Amino acid sequence: MEWFDADGYTLARALVQRGVAAVHVVAFVAVLQQFRPLLGERGLLPVRAFTARVPFRASPSLFHRWYSDRLVVLVGWVGVVVALTLVVGLPQQGPPWLPLLAFAVLWVLYLSVVNVGQVFYGFGWESLLLEAGFLAAFLGSDDVPPPLPVLVLLWWLVLRLELGAGLIKMRGDRAWRDLTALYYHHETQPMPGPLSRLFHLLPRPLHRVEVLANHVTQLVVPFGLLVPGPVASTAAAIMIATQLWLVLSGNFAWLNWLTIVLACSAIDDASWRWALGLVGVDLGPVAPVGDPPAWYVVVVLAVAALCVWLSRHPLRNLLSRHQAMNASFNALHLVNAYGAFGSVTRRRTEVVVEGTRDADPGAATWLEYEFRGKPTDVRRLPRQYAPYHLRLDWGMWFLALGSSSQLRWFVPFLGRLLDADGPTLRLLAHDPFDGAPPRWVRARLYRYRFATREQRRATGQRWVREAEGLLVDATDRARLARLQ
Image 1 (cartoon, helix red, strand yellow):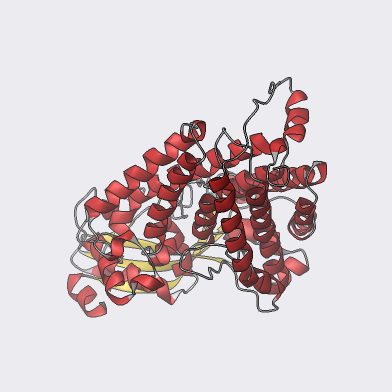
Image 2 (image 1 turned 90 degrees about the vertical axis):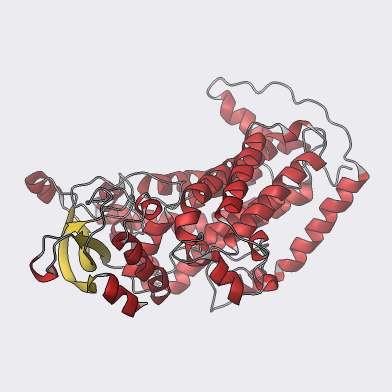
């Protein structure tokens, strides 16, 4: 079975299985905390309304037959518990069908969530997690060697992920081609982190070097994965270092962390032993394992054949001048096309939501609602939330860009604020009315930019903002009914 076994990648398998499972823990915790106010029975975009108009075959989900908030809580907790068992390695100690079953449960449950999640789950890293979880299911257990066909599929996934991101940048925006993209990106990215302002204030020549290094990492380095051994291990290490740089500079949910985990699949045991030996860590001998059972070989080869067949769509997309970013070619989210930031926003617009308890909105004192991740208070230091995904905050970023699809939930969101709805308010960082309902709400537009060092010293502000008008004028319950 030499053609099937990849004995030199036992640590890579362990890291991928446990790392992908850890990201699932984060994803299902977000389901427990955010799904009901966003998509539940009284959510902003209720699942039942979605499944009433979208057939099962177009968006398969356990929730198509029946949805309740209790069921989604059950799904969330089962997902967390099963994922945690994989993180600590319990299923991996049994026969190869046991981790396969555990990952299959995670895949079915999370697919059910994503396929009814609408705009709140319309992100490329949802498909990435589903594809990664599907492939991790067939990596086997500690009883068998890592299967080479599955590792090759993981390398192909990483290559598509990085190459897709690099090509969409070169095709999508001149700022990436002339190396000026980072003049803007750290400031205008969806959710800045605590260090984003410092990255933005770096000298512009260094920004150009950053962009050039990004192009090399995404357009050249991934081809090193095609040469297993030291070359692929070095390529993976470069990609991991680049992803850690992105982790420091922003909040991109679990995109960067999952990419790091998947890149670990290309680092062989010899490279790990060399690297860890530099810091005095000895991994010890590798325990011998037996030959894989025949049924396991057949299943892995069948899955590999399926993924090769499905790869024709993303491969065609990579070669296309009209490349699509973050596209799924089937309802199961298997073998997808990826990419990020094909265009760079040059200026940051924020939607600031305000409320008042005064009777006359024209002479009222307006107070601002504070979101957890997106900027509102100009003095507040942005928080680090990744790998956790704040779905409402990301939706607010797209809303500020003028996305009409976000208005479908934003008007009901204003209604929840007028009702002082508890689950909705818990998605926010601060309710200025301490649980009491406001009389009026409105949404104003501001341009935000990072304060310079001089402005920061003079005012204590991290952001400077300028009013740009209204998105939604003063609205009470009667006017909101007309908007809906």
